Length: 271
Image 1 (cartoon, rainbow, N blue to C red):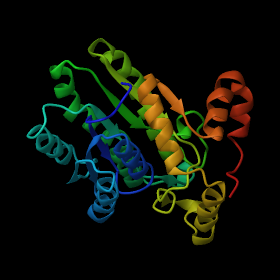
Image 2: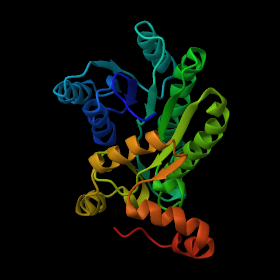
Image 3: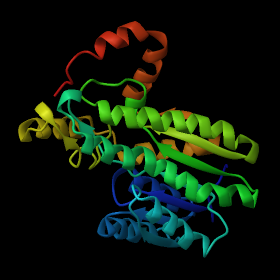
Image 4: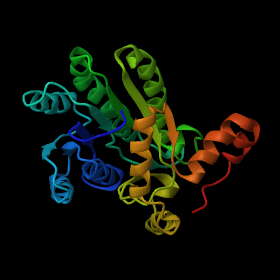
């Protein structure tokens, strides 16, 4: 898919961060947008910014952790258009805390959003994309944590490893339908996901949480930079796309120096 003008694009988690930036990047290329978020106010703000680019924008409120909510969203979309051209399963939540400090409630919540939200989105929209027979593309937001799992982030890493694995399997399955599938692995990006993360154990500390947010702010790799890489990955039909330099470093180190990476992963996070 080399151009996006008049393509039907749906993005979950569009109310802020990477979702918002990617929506605006697609809008700048003339795409027709379906914007989804559980936060209606943030979603409407993104929609207003996108409409300034002169494109058609429709907003949907959806809880991606709820299969029925996702299917209802898909039904609403398919009542107007035969199929999406591009689906971006981007909604997600962060979490941090050593395994013994984590609760099963947090495991369920993070997996329901980060992993099952992706599965529900694909399950609801891909049948129509396949039936239409004109190809398309699916973008699933994973993470650099899908390459190297920090001991302070077992739940988040598990969810993102799973998204990457699912994406690679789905890519092989959809190839015969000319539907590309990409796992985006951003890295340390300055977005609201950090402030909204679930913190447990020693990470559940206001001072430490503040340090984490300042670390990401100081790094200041922006959501807009990620968005441009997302669009290029769709153009080139890339399977797994690291984004920031640290994401690329993790991606390559895992392959070249797995033993050293294993030792480094035993260290505390730098905040």
